[in-house]
Image (cartoon, rainbow, N blue to C red; front, top):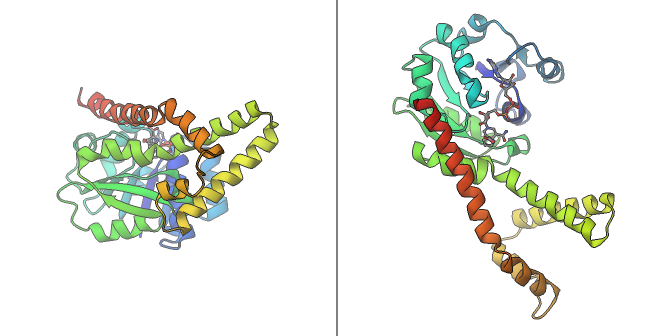
Length: 269
Ligand SMILES: NC(=O)C1=CN([C@@H]2O[C@H](COP(=O)(O)OP(=O)(O)OC[C@H]3O[C@@H](n4cnc5c(N)ncnc54)[C@H](O)[C@@H]3O)[C@@H](O)[C@H]2O)C=CC1
Ligand SMILES: O=C(O)[C@@H]1CCC=N1
């Protein structure tokens, strides 16, 4: 298997580290390139034993998959590198938010099978949620799904639904981290020092995550089990509801999904 990553940043590295650690590929199957010779990809070469190259012809020769893992704004430059050397057997897989299959096809001037995936950085710990959609001619889907399930769970969606998946789970963990960040800062307002606030929040989040993983109960039942009638939790939850938490989250998710739509429209111009 030869899998070539154009881009070795936060998302790509979470994917190839997840794949290698879960032994679905050998480090020698992975080829990395980036914008310029960067310390970061040399570090991956030394630490993981993956291949690194800036020779596009050599990179794309006999490649089974090419993974487009740059920012959408860098894609035209990436496409220029790939276009001359893309072989008919190579499947194209994009992780770029908002970049449509038809745009990838147009920029690469290719009829090759193309899939879009929307993972998240939880790939690093095998818990990414991967939205996936395919071009019609992407027939050999099982192999790609197997590769992706090495670092998470996979949900097949129509390309139009990618905007919502991008908001819900692509960006979603950032929203949760931000809530944890704000929680820790709020503990400091309560009087804890920074170290205590971080320690308490971190362990609270880890414990809650493990409860979600291990328990059969719904989020709502887990919450109710903590909430005594007329107790402290009820008082806090009433205050939270009064601030309109759900409305805030709906606004957040709509903003992210709209940005994904905007990114896809930019390309049409
Ligand atoms: N970070 C995340 O949690 C997620 C990111 N994504 C998508 O993944 C993509 C990458 O995001 P990040 O990894 O966060 O960005 P990043 O900034 O960490 O990495 C971008 C990579 O692209 C490379 N690159 C730029 N121009 C290039 C070129 N001409 N040739 C080869 N490589 C080039 C850079 O050298 C860098 O390695 C984006 O399109 C984003 O929409 C999708 C899901 C989640
Ligand atoms: O912020 C972004 O645009 C990318 C897509 C999903 C997560 N990060």
